[in-house]
Image (cartoon, rainbow, N blue to C red; front, side, top):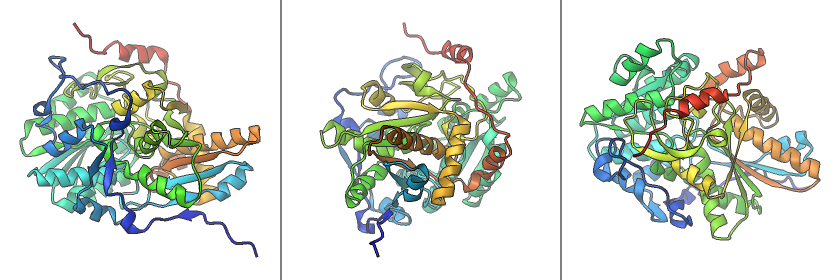
Length: 455
C-alpha cells in the first residue's frame, strides 16, 4: 500500500512565535507619518495617549524588526496556537489542477477567527496600564467577540458598537459578545454625538465601520478610564497578526514546499498582513519570490479603485489622518454579507506595501466568493466565513489558471475564520437572495469629494 501523504502540518506548542515581526524594518522606503486631524502636522505619542496605552503607541511607531511577545499573551495563544496548516488535497482533486493548495486555518481560536491574535495582546497591555474598560467597533462581529473574550480573560469591561446591518444580520455574534460580558449597541446609536449626528441626517442608514469607529473613539476620548481598541488597520494590530505568517513559514518547510503565491482576504488588512508580511520580508531579503495577493470585495473596492492619499479613519473625523487607499470616510458600503470587508480604507502598511509594488490587489464579486466557499466546504469540510471566501475564490482562480497553463503552482492562503455564525448568509446564497454589487463610480466620486484638503 502506498504511504498516505500528509494533509496537516503541525508545530509543537513550544514553537508558538516568541516575537512579532515588524516588516517596516525591512522595507526600502519608510511609511508616511500619521497627521493630526486639526493641524495636519505629524502626530506624537501624546496625541494618541487618550486612546491607547503607551506600550501599544510604541509598537505603532516602532521600526524594530522583532518585538517580544509577553509570556501572558503566549500562554493564552497556547489555547489554539500554533494554528494548523492543511494541504487541500480534496479541493485539488475536485479542480483537477496540477497546483498544490495549502491553507493556514485561523478558525480554531475560541472566537472562531484570527482576531484574538491582537485582541489578547491589546487587552494585556491595557490591563498592564491600568485601563478599566475598552471601547471598540465591529463589523461582522469577529473582532467584537474576540475583544470581548480577551477582556473577560484580563478582567476588563468591554463596550462594542456593532455596525447596524451586521447587528441585524448576525444575532449569534452579538449573543457571543454578550456571553463574554460585553455591552453591544447597534451603530449608529443615540449614545454618542457622532451617532446622533448621522441618525439626524440618515435615520435609516445601515451604518458603517467608519461610523462605529467614531462612536467608539468618542467614548474613549471622553472617559479617562476607557481606552480604544481597533481590530485592524493600525500598525500594532497588523504586527500582532504576524504569528500567522511566521508559523506558516515553518509549516511550509515541514511540507517541503515554498509558495509561489500567498493570498489573503483584505478589509482593513489584518489577517492578510498576518500571513503576507513575513513573506514580504522574505521577498525583500531575497529568500523567496512569492507573489503576494490581497483580495477585496467588488462592493468595497478600496485598493482596486480607491486613491492612495491621506484620509480620516472614521466618518466623524475624530481620528488622525493616515495615508492609505481609501474610498472616502463618508463611504457607506452596501449590506454585503462579508461584514469584515466593508471598511472605507485599507491599512496604511498594506497600502504602502502595495504602493511599493511588493504585492498586488484584486477584487471578487459576492456570488463568486460564496460559490467558492461552498465548493471549498464540500471538498474540505470547513465552512469559511464570508470574508474568507474571497481568499478561497482567488486560490481557486490561481489553481484553475495553473490547470489552463499546464504548470505546477504552489498556493498558500489564510482561511481567517469559520462561518458557523454566518449561516444566514449561506441560507440566503442557496435561496438565490444574494446579488453582485459593483459600487457605482459616481458614488465613489461623491465620497472622495470629502477628502481632506491641505493648505
